[in-house]
Length: 275
Image 1 (cartoon, rainbow, N blue to C red):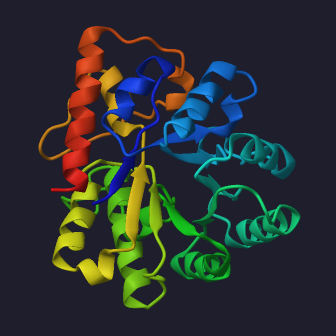
Image 2 (cartoon, rainbow, N blue to C red):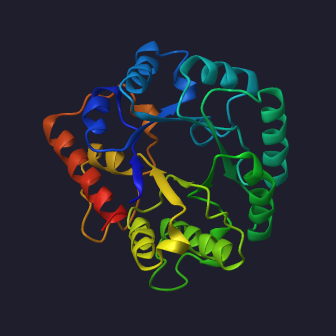
C-alpha cells in the first residue's frame, strides 16, 4: 500500500481526511492563518499522521531554519521535512547538516529531500542525507529529466509532465539498480506531474515487494486542484496538468459539483496507488 496525503482548501480539510492516510501541512501559512494551523493541531490530537513541509515548492525557497524549527517544536508533527534547496545537492547537504546540528532534538521524525542537477549529484545527496534521516523524499519535477526524456521525443512524452513522470521512475530504478536505496527505511514522493505515474509503483510493489517495499507514501494536491478546475481523471489519468498551486486556494469554497469531482479524483488517485 502507498499512503496518500492531499493538500486541500480548509473548507475540504475534514472531508479529505476520510479519503487519505494523513495530512500535509505547509509551514508558510501558519503565521498568517491560525485556523489553518489549528486544523493540524486537531488532526494530531485525533491520532492522524501529519507531515510538516518547509514550503520550498510553494515559495521557491525553503523556510529559514529558526522559523521552521520553532513551528516544529510548537506543532510536534509526526514528520518534518528538513529545509532543502531545489536541484542543488551541495547546498541541500550543507543546509541539512547545519539544520540538524542546530536543532538535533526536534519532536517528530526527520525527512531529508534528495536534490541534484544530475543523477550522480542526486545519488551523492542521497548518500549524504540517508544516515541522518528517518525517511527520504524525492521531488516530482527535476528540470534535467527533460534531457533524459525530451518533450516530443517519442509518443510517450508529448509534454514536460510526461518527461517528469518518466524521469522519476527512471531515477528510482537507477537508484535501485545501483544499490543506492536503503530498503530498510521508508521513502516518500513529493508531488506528482501526472497521477498515472503511481500505477507503475503500485504494480512494482506487487511484482517485486522485496525491491519496492521501501516506497511508503506520496503527497500531492493534483486530484484536488483538477477537481476544483472541473477536470476529471480518466482510467488513464491525465494528459496535461494544471499548474495552479493549492496554497493559493487555501480559502477557496467549492460548489457541490466541484466537491464531488475532488472526491472522485481522490478515489481514482488512491486506486492508481494501490491497484
